[in-house]
Image 1 (tube, protein in one colour):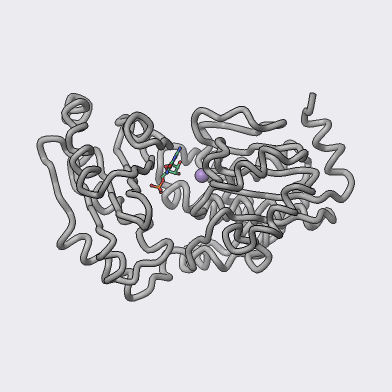
Image 2: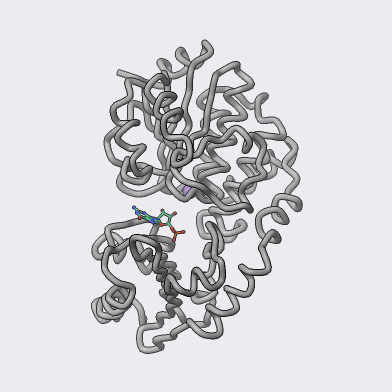
Length: 336
Ligand code: 5GP
Ligand code: MN
């Protein structure tokens, strides 16, 4: 049995540690990974964050960012670290498929695997689990894990605090989603006391768009938004040609779906984009409408009730039609 006592014992000596997170990392994925990294290096561990893929510029400024390894760019070196690690922390995901080809390497590694996550339906690949579906962010769980499980409050320095603040801020929609409890605000207050500069982090994440991104957003809103009032649904769809035309890069599409959801009365919003090899869907919903159910049932994905995603190998047109065909099944939930 590998329990918290075994984990504490292992962490009492410097170890080779890999921290990884889901592909196309978001603010919580990078914030929780680098938050944990900045804690572990203070204890003398040899820790490396390996991201399965690249991530946006507006997340590339956190303390420790320079040491992050991107699997797709350094496969051999990353594979060696994974194979030789004593511990692998799996953060903000709970199924090995979410880390692409790295999943097989992590699965094969002799390392003890620690899952820290807040998504539904965890797969059984871990040795130790710190998991809570009600947590607003994995970064909130990392804070709790360090402070409560490892008695490490004194190691929450400005670097750790900055990363964890970023994770909580991004995953809670800037402290506005329903799981932003008073306990979350207390954690955030602790993080500010520890040196996280809240206004600066907001600026670095949210006021850091390229002109091209803003023009692309304008195009999506003026030309590509479709509202289906009979289903209280709005969707924005983007072709590969538009992605090229507007020089859209990683992260540029982040958050666009929320504009569709912001229309009064809209309960379900979709952003459907044609990528190189597949069509990717991002769904957002208000209230108790289960966006994750649609993603799981029809688009090989999943997520949270109000924020979910999936993908398809069909053409963009087929996916848009399929999405619209599904809506009558959910009509009673959508128009209540
Ligand atoms: P996004 O729309 O920002 O890509 O993803 C929103 C949420 O949906 C993510 O936080 C994640 O929980 C979930 N999600 C997105 N894509 C997938 C996917 O392909 N598979 C699964 N299981 N979840 C996804
Ligand atoms: Mn998260």
